Amino acid sequence: MAFEKEIEAGTMVPLMEEFYTVQGEGYHTGTAAYFVRIGGCDVGCHWCDVKESWNAAMHAPTAVEQIAENTKKHSDTVVVTGGEPLTWNMGPLTNALQEKGIRIHIETSGAYPLSGHWDWICLSPKKTMPPRDEFYAVADELKMIVFNTNDLKWAEEHAKKVKSSCKLFLQPEWSKREKMMPIITDYVMKNPKWRIGLQTHKYIGIP
Image (cartoon, rainbow, N blue to C red; front, side, top):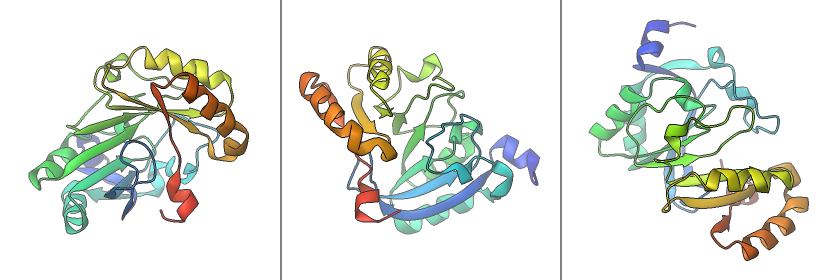
């Protein structure tokens, strides 16, 4: 990959895409934010809906200062997602965003060490590469993807580890939503610490 030293240092990142939209998932659903999708992921979820993000070499190395400037033109909130953004050193990117007064969110599997400074951490554990222990104390939101009923037990295992203020979401995997939604609804009614998470952006046709 070109600019290997810069990417290793975190001053450049493999940028798949960036766009301004309304958040479709989780605690901040319905609020405007600038999305920065970082390329590179080896977690390997079979149901991933952005598999084109996996190969970092396919995505142009981009200076973090440029990403911060682009963000500030549109929003005071950014969501850094992937791929798996913590594959890379996120310190320089979050520093550049902080300097512009931008509130910084991340969506991560927690499979890699935490780097950077974040105002909101959405942890979405994956069975292929479970989260590192350090994430449970800092996660503001726990998003569990439910592909089958076994995932409800998996979700509870992680819910026991996060801090008491962490928001808990059960989100049906998109291709299984019709089958799993009645099960999730019933489960949330019996276990009201959980909330139902929906991919509302897919329903209303926005990025």
